[in-house]
Amino acid sequence: MYKLQPLFKSVGETPHPSCVYKMKKISDHFNNNVTENNGTDCDAQDSATPNNCEVEQLEKRWTEITSRLQRLQSELAAIKTGSSSGLSSFIDAGERNFQDLVIHASPSNPPHSLPLLRERMEKLGVPVYARTHVHSAIAGNKLLSDTLKSFICSDSRLERSQAHMAITLIWIKGDGEEPSLVVSPSSQAVAINGEANIARYLARFVPGLLDYENQPLKAAQIDQFLDLTESTAPLGSRGMKRERAATLQSLDSTLSSRKSLEETSNEIGLVDFVVYSALVNSCMEKEIGKNVRAWMDRCRSTVKQAVN
Image (cartoon, rainbow, N blue to C red; front, side, top):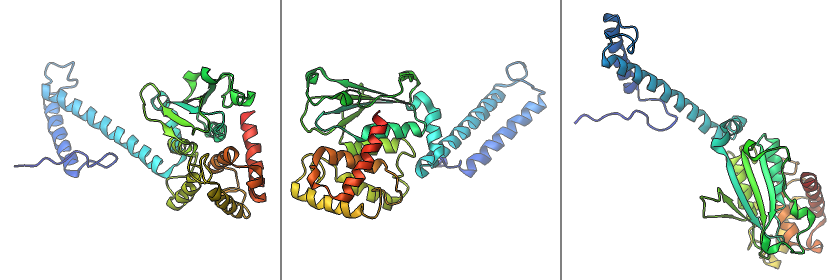
Protein backbone atom coordinates (compact mmCIF):
# COMPACT_ATOMS: atom_id res chain seq x y z
CA MET A 1 0.00 0.00 0.00
CA TYR A 2 1.24 3.50 -0.81
CA LYS A 3 2.46 5.28 2.33
CA LEU A 4 1.86 9.03 2.61
CA GLN A 5 4.88 11.13 3.53
CA PRO A 6 4.37 13.36 6.59
CA LEU A 7 3.90 17.03 5.80
CA PHE A 8 6.35 18.14 8.50
CA LYS A 9 8.84 16.06 10.45
CA SER A 10 8.53 18.27 13.53
CA VAL A 11 7.87 21.87 14.52
CA GLY A 12 10.49 24.17 13.09
CA GLU A 13 11.64 21.81 10.29
CA THR A 14 11.11 22.43 6.60
CA PRO A 15 8.42 20.55 4.63
CA HIS A 16 9.32 17.22 3.01
CA PRO A 17 10.72 17.87 -0.52
CA SER A 18 8.17 15.54 -2.11
CA CYS A 19 5.38 17.56 -0.50
CA VAL A 20 6.71 20.81 -1.93
CA TYR A 21 7.01 19.23 -5.41
CA LYS A 22 3.48 17.76 -5.33
CA MET A 23 1.93 21.01 -4.08
CA LYS A 24 3.69 22.89 -6.91
CA LYS A 25 2.37 20.42 -9.50
CA ILE A 26 -1.16 20.76 -8.17
CA SER A 27 -0.91 24.55 -8.13
CA ASP A 28 0.53 24.71 -11.69
CA HIS A 29 -2.14 22.35 -12.99
CA PHE A 30 -5.06 24.37 -11.69
CA ASN A 31 -3.46 27.70 -12.56
CA ASN A 32 -3.27 26.51 -16.18
CA ASN A 33 -6.95 25.61 -16.08
CA VAL A 34 -7.77 29.04 -14.76
CA THR A 35 -5.80 30.68 -17.62
CA GLU A 36 -7.52 28.56 -20.26
CA ASN A 37 -10.95 29.42 -18.90
CA ASN A 38 -10.04 33.15 -18.65
CA GLY A 39 -11.09 33.14 -15.00
CA THR A 40 -10.04 36.18 -13.00
CA ASP A 41 -11.82 35.78 -9.64
CA CYS A 42 -13.37 32.54 -8.43
CA ASP A 43 -16.04 34.35 -6.45
CA ALA A 44 -16.90 36.86 -9.18
CA GLN A 45 -16.73 34.80 -12.39
CA ASP A 46 -19.35 32.20 -13.27
CA SER A 47 -16.77 30.33 -15.33
CA ALA A 48 -14.56 29.62 -12.29
CA THR A 49 -14.74 26.00 -11.22
CA PRO A 50 -14.93 24.76 -7.60
CA ASN A 51 -11.47 23.25 -8.08
CA ASN A 52 -9.98 26.70 -8.73
CA CYS A 53 -11.40 28.00 -5.45
CA GLU A 54 -10.02 25.00 -3.60
CA VAL A 55 -6.55 25.62 -5.02
CA GLU A 56 -6.58 29.26 -3.91
CA GLN A 57 -7.69 28.21 -0.44
CA LEU A 58 -4.95 25.58 -0.31
CA GLU A 59 -2.32 28.12 -1.35
CA LYS A 60 -3.54 30.58 1.29
CA ARG A 61 -3.43 27.92 3.99
CA TRP A 62 0.01 26.81 2.80
CA THR A 63 1.33 30.38 3.16
CA GLU A 64 -0.17 30.74 6.64
CA ILE A 65 1.31 27.41 7.80
CA THR A 66 4.83 28.14 6.56
CA SER A 67 4.71 31.64 8.05
CA ARG A 68 3.61 30.28 11.42
CA LEU A 69 6.30 27.59 11.36
CA GLN A 70 8.97 30.20 10.71
CA ARG A 71 7.78 32.20 13.73
CA LEU A 72 7.77 29.09 15.92
CA GLN A 73 11.26 28.16 14.74
CA SER A 74 12.56 31.63 15.66
CA GLU A 75 10.93 31.50 19.10
CA LEU A 76 12.36 28.05 19.84
CA ALA A 77 15.83 29.16 18.79
CA ALA A 78 15.55 32.21 21.06
CA ILE A 79 14.49 30.09 24.02
CA LYS A 80 17.41 27.67 23.51
CA THR A 81 19.97 30.47 23.34
CA GLY A 82 18.36 32.71 25.97
CA SER A 83 18.81 35.67 23.64
CA SER A 84 17.18 39.07 23.95
CA SER A 85 14.93 38.20 21.02
CA GLY A 86 13.34 35.58 23.28
CA LEU A 87 12.55 38.33 25.78
CA SER A 88 11.11 40.49 22.99
CA SER A 89 8.91 37.60 21.92
CA PHE A 90 7.72 37.21 25.53
CA ILE A 91 6.95 40.93 25.85
CA ASP A 92 5.29 41.23 22.43
CA ALA A 93 3.04 38.28 23.21
CA GLY A 94 1.24 40.38 25.84
CA GLU A 95 -1.76 38.76 27.45
CA ARG A 96 -0.99 35.39 25.84
CA ASN A 97 1.96 35.01 28.24
CA PHE A 98 0.40 36.75 31.27
CA GLN A 99 1.45 35.07 34.51
CA ASP A 100 -0.67 35.30 37.64
CA LEU A 101 1.58 34.29 40.55
CA VAL A 102 0.61 33.98 44.22
CA ILE A 103 3.34 33.45 46.81
CA HIS A 104 2.54 32.39 50.39
CA ALA A 105 5.26 33.05 52.97
CA SER A 106 5.74 33.16 56.73
CA PRO A 107 6.93 36.41 58.40
CA SER A 108 9.52 34.29 60.23
CA ASN A 109 11.05 33.18 56.91
CA PRO A 110 10.69 36.05 54.39
CA PRO A 111 11.80 35.47 50.77
CA HIS A 112 14.32 38.33 50.72
CA SER A 113 15.22 37.63 47.10
CA LEU A 114 11.72 38.49 45.87
CA PRO A 115 12.06 42.31 45.72
CA LEU A 116 15.33 41.89 43.83
CA LEU A 117 13.73 39.46 41.38
CA ARG A 118 10.93 41.93 40.69
CA GLU A 119 13.41 44.75 40.17
CA ARG A 120 15.56 42.71 37.76
CA MET A 121 12.54 41.65 35.71
CA GLU A 122 11.44 45.27 35.37
CA LYS A 123 14.96 46.25 34.27
CA LEU A 124 14.68 43.59 31.57
CA GLY A 125 11.51 45.28 30.33
CA VAL A 126 8.88 42.99 31.88
CA PRO A 127 6.06 45.04 33.47
CA VAL A 128 5.36 43.49 36.88
CA TYR A 129 2.28 44.26 38.97
CA ALA A 130 3.16 43.39 42.58
CA ARG A 131 1.24 43.67 45.83
CA THR A 132 1.62 42.43 49.45
CA HIS A 133 -1.29 41.22 51.58
CA VAL A 134 -1.61 39.96 55.16
CA HIS A 135 -3.84 36.97 55.92
CA SER A 136 -6.43 37.76 58.58
CA ALA A 137 -5.13 34.91 60.78
CA ILE A 138 -1.87 36.77 61.45
CA ALA A 139 -3.03 40.39 61.24
CA GLY A 140 -1.65 41.10 64.73
CA ASN A 141 1.60 39.15 64.39
CA LYS A 142 4.46 41.02 66.07
CA LEU A 143 6.86 39.98 63.29
CA LEU A 144 4.87 41.97 60.73
CA SER A 145 6.87 45.19 60.53
CA ASP A 146 5.95 48.02 58.21
CA THR A 147 8.68 46.77 55.86
CA LEU A 148 7.06 43.35 55.56
CA LYS A 149 3.62 44.87 55.04
CA SER A 150 4.93 46.59 51.92
CA PHE A 151 7.57 43.95 51.13
CA ILE A 152 6.94 43.84 47.39
CA CYS A 153 5.11 46.60 45.52
CA SER A 154 5.22 47.78 41.94
CA ASP A 155 4.93 51.29 40.56
CA SER A 156 1.58 52.68 41.72
CA ARG A 157 0.98 54.02 38.20
CA LEU A 158 1.04 50.51 36.70
CA GLU A 159 -2.39 48.90 36.32
CA ARG A 160 -2.77 45.13 36.54
CA SER A 161 -4.16 45.05 33.01
CA GLN A 162 -0.95 46.67 31.70
CA ALA A 163 1.38 44.12 33.30
CA HIS A 164 2.78 40.91 31.82
CA MET A 165 3.14 39.39 35.28
CA ALA A 166 1.20 39.81 38.52
CA ILE A 167 2.85 38.78 41.81
CA THR A 168 0.78 38.69 44.99
CA LEU A 169 2.68 37.98 48.20
CA ILE A 170 0.49 36.81 51.09
CA TRP A 171 1.89 36.58 54.62
CA ILE A 172 0.43 33.50 56.29
CA LYS A 173 0.69 31.65 59.60
CA GLY A 174 3.47 29.07 59.77
CA ASP A 175 6.66 29.31 61.81
CA GLY A 176 9.67 28.77 59.55
CA GLU A 177 7.62 27.44 56.65
CA GLU A 178 9.16 27.67 53.19
CA PRO A 179 7.58 30.15 50.77
CA SER A 180 5.44 28.52 48.09
CA LEU A 181 4.38 29.69 44.63
CA VAL A 182 1.14 28.92 42.82
CA VAL A 183 0.84 29.80 39.13
CA SER A 184 -2.68 30.79 38.04
CA PRO A 185 -4.20 29.95 41.46
CA SER A 186 -7.69 29.42 40.04
CA SER A 187 -6.50 26.41 38.01
CA GLN A 188 -3.28 25.04 39.62
CA ALA A 189 -3.39 22.83 42.68
CA VAL A 190 0.30 21.93 43.02
CA ALA A 191 2.60 24.55 44.57
CA ILE A 192 6.27 25.23 43.83
CA ASN A 193 7.95 25.09 47.24
CA GLY A 194 11.13 26.83 48.33
CA GLU A 195 12.70 30.18 47.51
CA ALA A 196 15.33 28.56 45.28
CA ASN A 197 12.68 26.78 43.19
CA ILE A 198 10.66 30.01 42.87
CA ALA A 199 13.80 31.74 41.58
CA ARG A 200 14.43 28.87 39.14
CA TYR A 201 10.88 29.16 37.79
CA LEU A 202 11.14 32.90 37.23
CA ALA A 203 14.61 32.56 35.69
CA ARG A 204 13.35 30.06 33.14
CA PHE A 205 10.24 32.08 32.40
CA VAL A 206 12.01 35.41 31.84
CA PRO A 207 14.93 35.15 29.38
CA GLY A 208 17.99 37.04 30.60
CA LEU A 209 17.11 36.90 34.31
CA LEU A 210 19.67 34.14 34.81
CA ASP A 211 21.99 32.54 32.26
CA TYR A 212 20.92 29.08 33.32
CA GLU A 213 20.11 26.71 30.47
CA ASN A 214 22.64 27.25 27.69
CA GLN A 215 25.79 26.68 29.80
CA PRO A 216 25.60 23.24 31.49
CA LEU A 217 28.70 23.72 33.66
CA LYS A 218 27.54 27.10 34.93
CA ALA A 219 24.03 25.70 35.52
CA ALA A 220 25.53 22.93 37.67
CA GLN A 221 27.46 25.48 39.74
CA ILE A 222 24.36 27.62 40.19
CA ASP A 223 22.30 24.60 41.26
CA GLN A 224 24.99 23.66 43.77
CA PHE A 225 24.52 26.99 45.58
CA LEU A 226 20.71 27.02 45.26
CA ASP A 227 20.45 23.49 46.64
CA LEU A 228 22.19 24.64 49.85
CA THR A 229 19.14 26.77 50.68
CA GLU A 230 16.49 24.02 50.67
CA SER A 231 14.71 23.69 54.04
CA THR A 232 16.66 20.60 55.20
CA ALA A 233 19.93 21.60 53.49
CA PRO A 234 22.84 23.17 55.45
CA LEU A 235 21.61 26.76 54.93
CA GLY A 236 17.91 25.89 55.16
CA SER A 237 15.64 26.70 58.10
CA ARG A 238 15.80 23.05 59.27
CA GLY A 239 19.43 22.36 58.39
CA MET A 240 21.89 20.71 60.78
CA LYS A 241 24.13 23.14 62.69
CA ARG A 242 27.29 21.09 62.08
CA GLU A 243 26.70 20.98 58.33
CA ARG A 244 25.91 24.69 58.30
CA ALA A 245 29.25 25.53 59.92
CA ALA A 246 31.17 23.60 57.24
CA THR A 247 29.14 25.21 54.45
CA LEU A 248 29.70 28.72 55.82
CA GLN A 249 33.43 28.06 55.97
CA SER A 250 33.39 26.95 52.33
CA LEU A 251 31.40 30.05 51.31
CA ASP A 252 33.83 32.29 53.14
CA SER A 253 36.71 30.72 51.22
CA THR A 254 34.86 31.13 47.92
CA LEU A 255 34.09 34.80 48.57
CA SER A 256 37.69 35.60 49.51
CA SER A 257 38.60 35.83 45.83
CA ARG A 258 35.41 37.25 44.30
CA LYS A 259 32.49 39.53 45.12
CA SER A 260 29.69 37.35 43.80
CA LEU A 261 28.77 33.67 43.94
CA GLU A 262 28.41 33.74 40.16
CA GLU A 263 31.96 33.04 39.10
CA THR A 264 31.86 35.00 35.84
CA SER A 265 30.51 38.19 37.42
CA ASN A 266 31.40 40.54 40.27
CA GLU A 267 27.87 41.94 40.28
CA ILE A 268 25.41 40.71 42.89
CA GLY A 269 23.05 38.38 41.03
CA LEU A 270 20.08 36.09 41.42
CA VAL A 271 22.07 33.28 43.08
CA ASP A 272 23.47 35.74 45.62
CA PHE A 273 19.96 36.98 46.46
CA VAL A 274 18.64 33.49 47.23
CA VAL A 275 21.65 32.43 49.32
CA TYR A 276 21.64 35.77 51.15
CA SER A 277 17.97 35.27 52.03
CA ALA A 278 18.70 31.80 53.44
CA LEU A 279 21.56 33.15 55.57
CA VAL A 280 19.46 35.99 56.99
CA ASN A 281 16.72 33.54 57.98
CA SER A 282 18.87 30.70 59.37
CA CYS A 283 22.26 31.94 60.63
CA MET A 284 23.53 33.77 63.68
CA GLU A 285 25.90 36.71 63.24
CA LYS A 286 28.70 34.95 65.13
CA GLU A 287 28.62 32.01 62.68
CA ILE A 288 29.53 34.17 59.69
CA GLY A 289 33.12 34.82 58.55
CA LYS A 290 34.47 38.21 57.43
CA ASN A 291 34.25 37.51 53.68
CA VAL A 292 30.65 36.30 53.92
CA ARG A 293 29.80 39.27 56.15
CA ALA A 294 31.21 41.78 53.63
CA TRP A 295 29.28 40.03 50.85
CA MET A 296 26.08 40.11 52.92
CA ASP A 297 26.52 43.85 53.47
CA ARG A 298 26.60 44.36 49.70
CA CYS A 299 23.51 42.18 49.30
CA ARG A 300 21.69 44.03 52.11
CA SER A 301 22.41 47.38 50.48
CA THR A 302 21.00 46.12 47.17
CA VAL A 303 17.90 44.75 48.91
CA LYS A 304 17.20 48.06 50.66
CA GLN A 305 17.38 49.92 47.35
CA ALA A 306 14.87 47.53 45.80
CA VAL A 307 12.44 47.64 48.73
CA ASN A 308 12.51 51.43 49.19
